[in-house]
Amino acid sequence: MENLSMTRSGIYFRPGTSDRSMIGQCKKNYKYFTFTSDSIVCDFGGNIGMFGKMALDAGCKQLHIFEPDDENFKMIAMNLSKEFNLNPLRVQCYHTAVSTIN
Image (cartoon, rainbow, N blue to C red):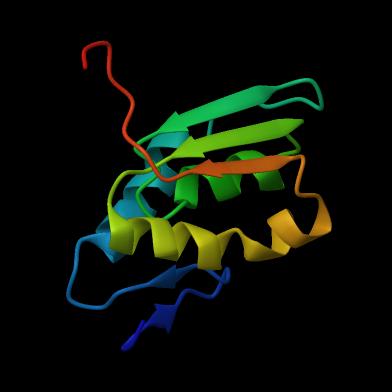
């Protein structure tokens, strides 16, 4: 991927897209979520992985993140690579959509 920027907290984003706004919205809207060492988190529509990163940083036991878009999935892989490499059983990324219908 080209033309990437990084936040001070180490999240990659694509300038000129909604990524930066989404990062701010996640920080604002999800900062009060509580995760424990027993929390198993599912993120449906993971975008670039910000919510998943927040859950991992807060100490959740396991993260399952789903994202169908190719470019967003690549961003998730970049943004969660450190956590995945430290413990691949803790972070599971799925390049797929989730639906109740076929």
